[in-house]
Every structure is written in C-alpha cells, then in structure tokens.
Image (cartoon, rainbow, N blue to C red; front, side):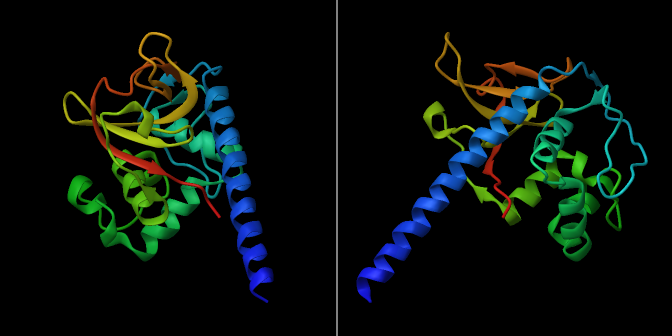
Length: 196
C-alpha cells in the first residue's frame, strides 16, 4: 500500500511538472507571437462583446499583450476577471482608483491594477528581486513607469546578450516588443498564473 501511494505521489508530481513545462513553453511562444503584430498604442475605452471581447487587432496596450497571449491558449481573462470581480468587487482597486461602483466587463481586465489583484487571488505571488535569475519564463511582471503609470509584461526564455537578463514581451507604446527591460523601471509585482 505504501509503495502504491509513493508511486501515485511520484506520478502526480511528474505529471504536474510536465504540465507546467508545457504551459511555460506555450505561454512564451504565444507571447513571442504577439511581437509579430503591428499594434498602435491605444487604451481608449471601448464597448466589447462578452465573452471573448477584444479591441480591434491593430490597437492595444500592455494589458492587451497579456490578454491576447492567454487567449491564444484558450484562457479568457475578460471572463475570469469579470466573474471574480462580480463576486469579490471589494478585493479589486476599481472603486479606490477609478471611483467605480460595480465591475465593467469592457475595461476591468485591461487595467494593470485589476490584473495584479486577479493574479494575487488566483495565481502565485513571487518574490520581487534584483536578481534576474528569480524571473522565469512565463512569469508576469508589473512595473510603475514615470508619471505613476502601471505596466505589465511577460518574461520569456530568451536572454539578453548584453545583460544576461531574461527578455520581456510588452507594449510600452510602440506595439508588442521583445526587449531587455526587466530592471528599467520599478518592479511592483511578480506573478505566475497557470489556469487549471
């Protein structure tokens, strides 16, 4: 009986690690694919269909890189964030930051502070470190840009030749790019989100 339990635990751990490795490869591949799209930086409010709503493919901001990357894997952050906010609105900063009294499925998932709250609630909060080796492929990192502008990007498995830092897929204004910018701004969050 003990041997069977040990075998079951080993198989469970092995399958979990294999699943995690597959997810990492898929999320990084989907993020890198975003860099092939021509996107004009535009965060204006738009009415979106629900579920599966998206702004036009030629526009977007940093959050849209994350949303579209996860959607390529069949994960709809619009729905997940909206459903969680509908049940747990006080756990999100929408009232404090934007003065909202209820969730808005058109914009909530496109705001970095809401994604941070969602990843804290449903993902893994990881250490914010000055050591680049702490940031693994598939991780999500948030920053505060000058002017108190929140930003988000996805860590890839590619390393910068110049610094050795992991390269980030993000959109800081010139469309989705792969860049060595991990330590360019103050890091405000570090997460891993692998949906069940």
